[in-house]
Amino acid sequence: MTVPGTWYLTVAAVLFTIGAVGLLIRRNVLVMFMCVELMLNAVNLTFVTFSGMLNDIGGQAIVFFVMVVAAAEVVIGLGIIVAIFRRRTDATADDLHMLKG
Amino acid sequence: MLAATHYADWSVFLVASVIVLAGAIGVVVSRHPVHSALFLIQTLFGVAVLFVSQQAHFLAAAQVIVYAGAIVVLFLFVIMLLGVDRSDDVRFEPLKGQRPTAILLGILGLAEAAGLLHSGSWATGSTSVAGPLNGTGGSNVELLGRSLFSTYLLAFEVTSALLVIAVVGAVVLVRKPAAGETDDAEETGAQSKVSRS
Image 1 (cartoon, each protein chain N blue to C red):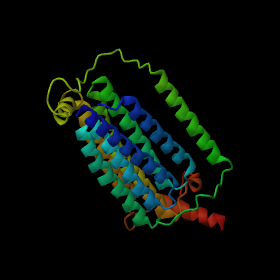
Image 2 (cartoon, rainbow over the protein chains, first blue to last red):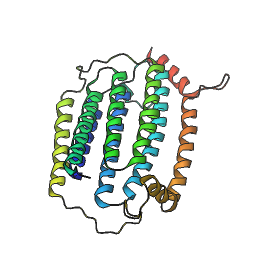
Image 3 (cartoon, rainbow over the protein chains, first blue to last red):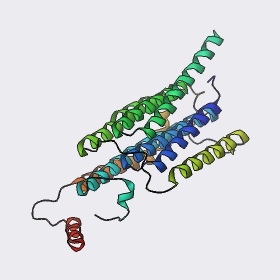
Image 4 (spheres, one colour):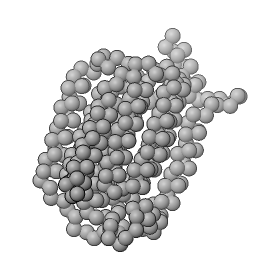
């Protein structure tokens, strides 16, 4: 690994920040969901980098589990979004403050 | 020869990083959800390249198959299915000062992460239970498979239960109520409409 791990960690930190800021400034729930995926990917990149830096396979094993949990999370989240859209035509986060139909 | 691989590694890293960050910014600033999804694919591919450059070959393949293949297709399905593929006005700001505050918080968080990175004292005193990444021989896939099916076997089995629960939950969530069966949520919605009018 010629490129030092710190560079990968920096890229992951910037990616996480972009995802977090996007989650805060966007109101479309689908785009907010995609920003959560960006943050998950930044964390995955950090895990893989530490796995390389510390010579430990555990970092890559946990990325595998993060991917599984992310897949389950997307399935459930998109199911909720479909259920919301069945009742109303618009779904910005501001319209969903009632926690009921 | 050494210098050549050195330059190759650095150029791969730089190109992949630019792809990742440009895609991430594209996800956030696109007005159209479909464009956001396509930029998300770009970012996920870039992260897969960064995985390959760090010898995580299995995870790079899983990243492309699971994320870019399945998850983004699911996103696109929902966008197309619901007909929400219209752009929203990103300049409209219902909450005053939300955007500057969010950007300020982001910069603060990034500065904090950079500060931690610069101080660079990792608390890594414990010995690994998962095994070394290289040294015992064998490919990355073999090592990861051995670790998953021995050290993390219980967690691996639990993820199968999690996936089954997620599938059942998704079916229950989007199921249309059968004819004759009363839908509580719909009734309360109708009532609130009546009381509003």
